[in-house]
Length: 500
Image (cartoon, rainbow, N blue to C red):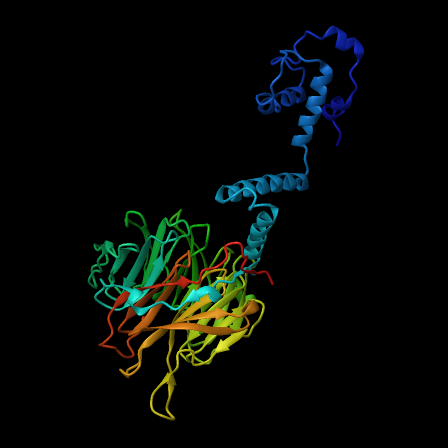
């Protein structure tokens, strides 16, 4: 719809007015004849401060042309705005890269490469080729931190790689300094029946998660409670209740303070930590029943999430992995393992790794209902000839947006065999797993986490499995193992990205 405001901006100035008003002010600040003129006079004020002039006055011709130009800024289409912001973003990227090295080295191709990485990461297809440069660590280089009295069940590494947080069946939480290996803070566990007065957990802690900005820590226990802590001070903030079974999985959505929780009650709940609020429940009784007749048929044993508004869960004995697409109000169901799926970890937005008590490790794509690759008996077998049983896969980990993953086995009753951490290389397009090296560890490897930088891998080890007590390894020691990940010298100019 046209208006007098836009028509007036295009009119040609009259010579008579030019002669009469050369020394007159270009515009009155007050007393505009109508509301439209008053609005037009206010808009260019931001730009008037930035434009210098040698004269205190200007002709109506200059004034009108400038008004038309400024009007175009306000009237730009959404496409023009996106283009303008993209150009600004490209300039910012170029400045950032130029600060890291010589101006001649960081040119347009480097900026384009970084943009390509971001696009691939958003699509869930980024695969940094890191595995080929990894070297097996020397056993003497592995550091062991001890402080828990009972088996470690879960751990996380802070986003800046400075701290490790661990929890155990003794109901305690410990904050460790990575560089020194010292305990910085301990929240002791309480006795059963003291829930009302004890600040902390009074039952086995099964899972924990840390927000991507390192502000909040969440822990879940057998008593169906979720505790929220402030990372910096370890101050207790909130207690979330609502699940009807033990809390078995926790994960913060990256870039937000939205928390996903999974439970043995077979449901997934969404919470907002900033608001100290429950958001919704994802289960077979909710919106997702239209896509799948029933939700998980057994206790959920693991959960993970990244940036998208979705999470992935492992269903234990029901033999399924499910991707809960919250915004789309649907879910995807995957089948593959023959045994209980006890652990799951996302590699990127479209690929994940799982481990099961049938001894297998599998790679998945969200676009395929069956695994892309499966390694059976990934950690070997134990038992007499003809009665061999595979070692359970108790934990898995992924160095996000890379081709490097890890798996941890459960211990066995035979003292002749120790557990081990296996580090794997994913094949192109995640179609294959190649063993890089193994690190021997005595005990149940209940939790594995890569550091954000990929410089080390942390394993939480205990005498018992985190989800039960089928048998106990007395010779094992409860502790945190920090495994360094050394790399071969490489050419810094080489781009190691699989864009397929």
